[in-house]
Image (cartoon, rainbow, N blue to C red):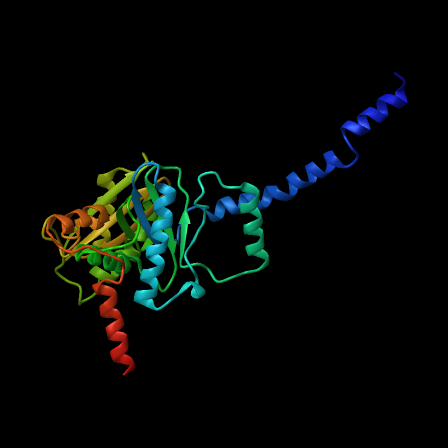
Length: 302
């Protein structure tokens, strides 16, 4: 075979520009992929809601919770999908099309839209979910409304595999300094000032995928942020400080004394209790809390 034949064969197997095009495409997509990955992480400064669910039901639970959250946002705050519909940071498909996801992200960059009220974050831990939220959503009162309705027999459509909800008011780095900063931000409105004296409180921590922080050290730092003039009471507390440590981030919130009564915000247990007690479980989410809010709005408008 002569040299010219070899050249023609090589040109047929590798048409001109193909290898260069692949290299160019690889270079073109590398940066957006990194940006997409960063956008889907939980970052200091985020606010949101943790949730647990049955194993291998994460995608289904994300979809169910998204629908429930969006409907409650409409009932409680009067915001609809047009104001920022609930969206997932990750596809609900167990095997998403990576290229489609990248194109979707690039489309969002070129055509900015309103930030969604709820953005799901795909985690590497089984049975664990997280939704980032934005105003007007206030995670503590929002989750309390959902659980209060569940305790009164109002069962959201879906949510068959959802278990516990945990509201998070602020998130920082899972370091001593980060814990101090978040603790001060979260506890100050509830424990500091002349109108917030003599409170009985408790601290409850949950740590996942983090071996650097010790539970007792975390509790001591948060108790220091609470300050003097308050008393620890693990059973009959006025306020409970929830602490969620996951990998390199730490989130906190302060909830009320009915936390235990509401089964620690575990929807699965709340549904079981209402069914066992003989309460009528309604299939819907137009619960008592939402009804009271709507009634109050109607009165104000009059």
